[in-house]
Amino acid sequence: MTRQLAFDLPVSETFRREDFFVSPTNTTALAALDAWQGWPGAKMLLVGPQGSGKTHLAHLWMQATGAALVRGAALATADIPELAGHGSVCVEDAEGAAGDPEAEAAFFHLHNIVTRSGALLVTATTPPRDWGLRLPDLASRLQAAPLTRLDAPDDALLSAVLVKLFSDRQIVVPPNLIPYLVQRMERSLATARLLVATLDAVSLAHARPVTRQLAASILGTDD
Image (cartoon, rainbow, N blue to C red; front, side, top):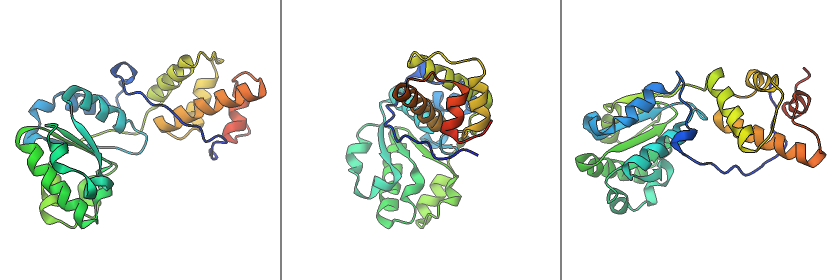
């Protein structure tokens, strides 16, 4: 079991295509978003657990379409005509709108405008039926949308991401470190970024190499 990482470090994220590692956990979702011009009803739900890569994939879609971004919880105060003026829109963490009458009404309005001539991408951790939506018209439209899923990162994806993160920081690590981390860390791409940043910071602060022993001290494990 991992403990809370010792360092609360800012993590700068870039969402480039070359940094998106394709694996069996995300191949179907990537193909679905690449085929956005053929979406039924001009909309798509992208569903997956926290840390599965939804944000990265959504940003790739936005780069391809010129779409605007709004978070579900911000819809109540969002400028809907301005968002719709981009043609396509991504509503990220869409379940955040559920239960807020103004946010749900804004979501419904945005949905109706954008799907007439653009495309709407909606990301969430669960399908719309689980959000607790109160506006029946919004619930029915979202539940009718096609849905593609991202699974939690598998060993191969986490390993590739860790190797890339260490390489970006020019950190040479022993061969046994990557599998050690993969078997003990939370299965999340965000955790991978934070873990590598923390190892780097502790290594520099204490003039220690990044080793399995250092990782054990950060993760709070005995082996």
